[in-house]
Image (cartoon, rainbow, N blue to C red):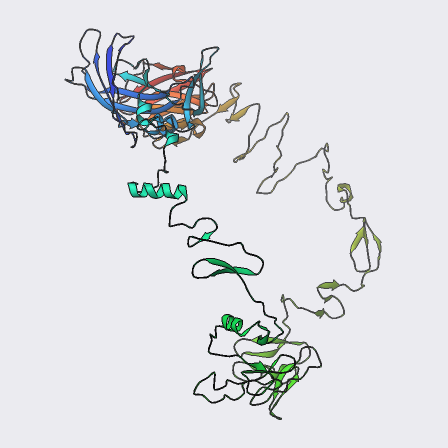
Length: 625
């Protein structure tokens, strides 16, 4: 990459010269860039501090000015003569809530359609030229560059250099041409595909494939490099020894015998019998297959000329009987009949099976030996592998069928029937039928229930309760509505607990009020302390007093409201510079935070007290704890 030499003259008259150099490869991830320079004070002497803080920012080059990358470097420049060298990309990177956490190499790539989103983009309004902090994405463009912003603090305050354009970095990370060819002219693979190089043999195969001359793949309308003829209905392909021909299959009539085949030659071809065997079928005895007049197999033998050296085999199956013992194949008379063996006559007969014909795994009848009693039912016992007579259970067991309870309630097929035991008619405020069911006049007003209460009930809006309302020990529950008190006090000797808001003109936690303050408290008022862990993102909704184990750096706030008083304890012990900003609900830039004393590097644990008044935050801080 081409080196860039640039000089800067700060407002404190510090001369800063720098060089950016790097060798990122277009085929590997860019991990760092070398940044070199020398710092000279106005008196001509070089910086000689033991702890010099450098903050490096890389931003987009458009008006959106998005913060793409931020890191911190701590330099020991004792005896350095002001010369330093850092690798951008190897410093302590800021939290992803600050710069988005995008990989170092990706922020220089102009290939993606968009980059981001990034938490902080300080867009410059083209009309008012005012910086607008927003959160958006950055749209790279071919040939686009990036901006490098360096902030420096050697103990005399933070100084920020004018940004530098990194014009050659994106071109190096993402080359626009390879050997003079544009990306659209190259054969590319996805990043996760690994393959060997294509040699000249593979290249020639690729050309043959495009030309249709490759011998490893069949061509259209060819098989084994021989043309395929056009087929008609019921045809298939057959090889003649030199070419393919369209071959018509010979259909067989399912109700005919094999003599329906056109010729003996066709029979041999289809049945695979060759030229030395014959197939006889007919009604004459001795044929290979003997059929009756209806085409059904009547007898079947294999002749000696087929099974050479074997005598004729006795008949296997004859129409009308099944051998040993014979089964007369007759017709049933009732649906559901089947073949059943009758041992008393030693014959097969056509009849329905009886339930007593069933046996269990002990070869015994699974049925009870005696009839079941009244109110019993048949149940299966898995232990005896048999059915048993079982009494209907009494209790909550579901009973299928009809359940009669004395002369009263009865249940038939799930329907409950009630006896007529009540005189139908109209009663006070209700009307019932003969079974005692309410059928009319069921709406009662609150004024209908008064007898025996001992007091006049409050039953509608606008009613006034007289006397004392005594509540039980568990108190009064108001539900989702508010408990409103006008012109009086709500007094409680215990706690008043509310999950919602408690709204009052005055709140007095005191035995006697001495002022007209809106809130008056006798005793301590505690604010819960919130542990933010090691985070640099502080949400003040967690409490007005918070602490973090992070070192000083860039802190991002949210929910800091006008008129609020806040305390942040930074327990990191590494000396560093703290800066604050807020994104929501009201955006506050780092410049809106005013520090007394003037902000410098911290020196150990530090306590920051922040008071927001309007859109400015006044900060006092004590360090060195």
